Image (cartoon, rainbow, N blue to C red; front, top):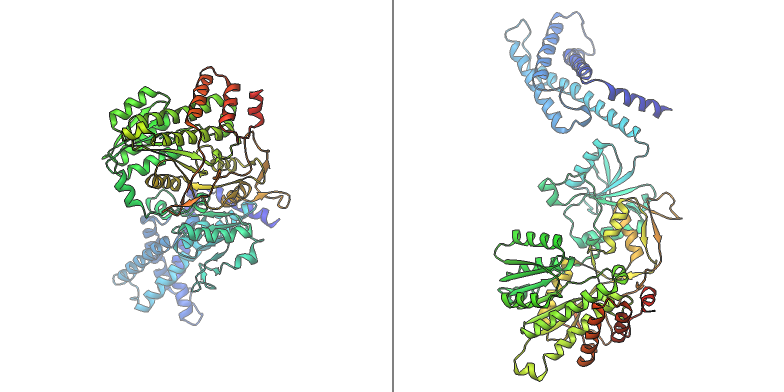
Length: 639
């Protein structure tokens, strides 16, 4: 009942017209000015006052006239009371200094008693107290009424009692959208003190109040990733949603305000810092060379292109058949480093004549082959397109590199090529075998006579965070729409690394190749997709909706494994992984196919591709990749 009347009061106050508000404020200030000397006299005369004192009446009227004139001229009534800050308090104090100074100076020319220094000081502080305190009271009442209007105010703690935490608290107090329960900080110097009247607690305090708070607001914008991980892991155990203030760069540049709370990027928790010890060797090797990146507009290809651009190559040739993607990366690189000649080529790598002329014209030294159709479900539905693109492009590029004696060819492969359970994985496995075959050819008698020194190698790794088609962008989109998040199976496990890290390690691997190598990248610890979804919900400042928490925000729905999807991904086919000089890169020796057998089957595949013969194409693929677990969808196409 009380709250209802308070809401009515808030609505009434909001409905008051600006002119009326100004008049009310003016009237209250008149009272403050008029009664200032009455209050001073009352306390000076032992709580007695003579209301008939003409001097007291005259100076009060004169102070009121001077004060109202100064207030009107200086814009006292233009500010919004709800948002009064310390800056406006100082300005009001300065106005009062000016008013008392004018009054004191005028007493020399009017029939008033000359004010003593003590009377001036008393008048200044009494007037300031009256005119400032009633404004602060009104401000707090308005903010309180605003909170009452909001049905449920989330209870939050601010993690970080530094400058950012103080600024966030001040901003949230004005907005009235959150009730701040406490500050959390691991500094023993700050513990059990308070900030703006709010207690600062040690992180262990969260255990005591975890059921009484709705959100943790992380207010340490300069956190390193390893520090962030540590804090998040501790809060994750308590199952409390988290949001974060913007970074220092965003705050300084003005791109965001301190109260622009945002989800914490999952990449910061799953990614690792890549070692930089070979950076000089990379630059030494790539500097001045002509590099070609296929699939340059894709997730990995574009990041590879960025990294190579930093290594000062002579030419950087970007090949992609997606016009928007190629345009975007070409524009970015041309603006970024104008000393590198960037050559965008809009084409399919299946065009043998075009690619060969291109490589000859630009004297290409290194080819990084990242072009591929990679979306499992789409390739499963369109096997001819997927196989033709992934297999024939690799074959044609390897052939050209061998013919032109290009220094290095490196295929970017995937963990889905290991005992593949889908057409896409099988196509990438066959691409790996093609690369191994061309590496073996460099040791043939004819190639030895012609001093062919081309080195062919493969780099195999797992899922890349945030890449096109990966679960993270999908989960972000689903969370933004209010859910549910769709996960195929509660036991699905995947490896993840950042795009930047994967690209840097691909370049590091290119330095280690002796020809015929299959390199594996250390993907870190595997992650359950279900756990990833739950963590992304928490890092978005929301709660998981399930049987144990019916009041949650986002539900996880299990849809069942898709055709060609595996529960677990692997990186090794056979043999053991051997260490290299880079602790994140391993080398494996894997079996290859007979060159004659492979060529015969590839020619047959190419024939079936041209005839759009799915059944025979998949049949030949199963001969070449006997470990391929044919999905139900592929099996239907074989029958």
